Amino acid sequence: MRMYEKYWRDSASVIVLARNQHNERDNHGYNYKVLVFKRTENTSFLPNHIVFPGGSFDPQDDSTDWLRLFGEQRIPPEALQTVTSMSDPRPHIFRRMEGDQLDRSISVRLCALRECFEELGVLLVANKGPQTGFSVARTDFDVRTWQADVHDGRKAFRQLYEQLHETPDLWGLYEWSTWMTPTHFRRKRFETAFFLAALNEVCPVLPENYEVQEYMQTGISAFFLETIFIQSSSTSFLTMRI
Image (cartoon, rainbow, N blue to C red; front, side, top):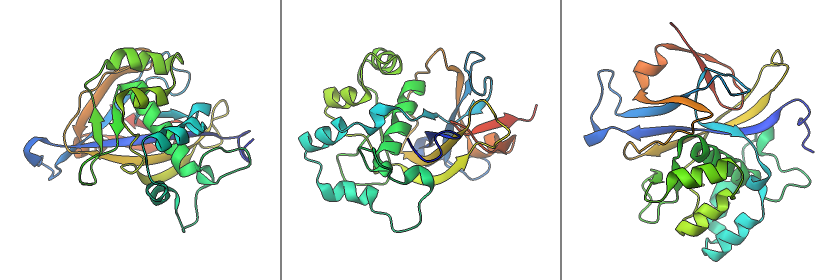
């Protein structure tokens, strides 16, 4: 059991930014859009709120099967060390505790990637070509079936990467911040690691019906100028000014 598990559950979220077509800038000078969605009223936490994709840590995110996959794909240890080697003080969510199977810088990223796929059908894979700093979204497979199977627990997220002969994009997720749900939220509280992922172009989105009411890929100013940040949860949540 992790030190604060009784009070805050671990979770991860990814802020997906996508560059505009032809690198065009909007009226505010930004050349990218941000991907968010509105939760349905059925969800147990923050129904009808606008959030970034993300959610709770799952045991499969810490499975040693991922190490087997990396070995089969001949991912060199040095490549993984670029993700795990951190000299600065780390938020508690990244601290490895007794019983953890993977380095937390890997498992927490896997959580963010899985939730992004489960909720919006966006599968981020490692770039096999020259490293550009951009993530790659793979879409040429049966996204809807795999999304449902992973979301409902019929298949492990790792199996999707195995079938596609892809590697999860650990390297394209940039640590942004870590937030903790305020204590006045008594039913559910989370410590959430936020990552940034940049896409070279807007990708197709396939929202999961139970959790997602609608999604938006919108200009950064148009979105954030009309919102108030509230400190977070299992995903970052924003309340719109109406």
